[in-house]
Image (cartoon, rainbow, N blue to C red):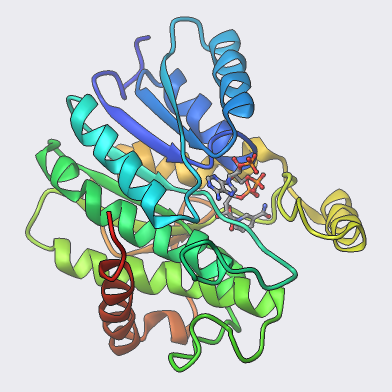
Amino acid sequence: MTGHMQGQTVMVTGATDGIGLVTARELAALGARVLLVGRNEQKGQRALADIWQAVKGANLAFHRADLSLMSEVRRLAHTIAETEAQLDVLVNNAGGLFQHRQETAEGFERTFALNHLNYFLLTNLLLTKLREAQAGRIVNVASRAHEGGRLDFDDLQSARNYKGWPAYRASKLVNILFTRALAKRLQGTSVTANALHPGFVRTAFGGGNPLVFRLAVRAAMMVLAISVEEGAKTSIYLASSPDVAGESGGYYAKSRLTEPSAAARDDAAAERLWQVSEAMVAGLAG
Ligand SMILES: NC(=O)c1ccc[n+]([C@@H]2O[C@H](COP(=O)([O-])OP(=O)(O)OC[C@H]3O[C@@H](n4cnc5c(N)ncnc54)[C@H](OP(=O)(O)O)[C@@H]3O)[C@@H](O)[C@H]2O)c1
């Protein structure tokens, strides 16, 4: 490995498929040690084998964790803190859209738990490690779907009225608000935090939902979506490019700084979200 990421350790969540898998592979090709995180051991081992085949001598490890459970997020963060000498980049990528409302064993609505609380808690638990890095980077995979997303602070768990697409849009709006509040807290440190839209990407996204829903997503992807290689580019750019060294608090699409929606620039909402999220995860044992 001779790339410019040599000597750096990167963690990519949701790295067993889609955008995360390609992000992990390309960062490994740039020489980074890559920690892949996914919930499925078999898919994890397959992802390692695929990357080793594509990138000879890649420095990789797989960690199994169901990131919709905060107990698993804590276990993962603890393991990394104990076993890894350093962590330079965290790519929060694992996410999903769920057509029907489900609650995790910890009582959180699944979209909110996986797409937001996971990003929030994992990042905060790994911050000490990222601060120790020379120039730590946090990359949060959001989506253009945040446009039109609405955040109801009185019903963040969508207990009253759940619909898959609005819950997903709200969670992606939350990714950007979280990034802004985080970047503000990181000012004056060596760690940066940015969010991104990967594009509409041909992946396994939406899997696990009813057949009609999956077929509709697949059909749209066949016609409109870009390749996974293309879709991973902005994540790779934010995780590795010298162009964005020191840049923080931004939202990127096609590897360019882009203005997100007005709701995603609401710093009062970002601050409120931080407080609420902190209280939610603090209430859990572990
Ligand atoms: N595809 C798009 O057009 C698009 C557009 C905008 C934004 N995004 C965002 O891009 C990110 C990646 O999406 P993708 O399209 O690459 O989706 P994907 O192909 O479904 O991949 C998602 C990855 O996350 C993992 N994952 C799902 N639930 C998990 C859990 N509970 N714990 C741990 N890992 C879990 C999946 O593991 P399994 O393989 O075990 O399911 C898989 O590795 C998401 O944040 C999504 O919101 C995607």
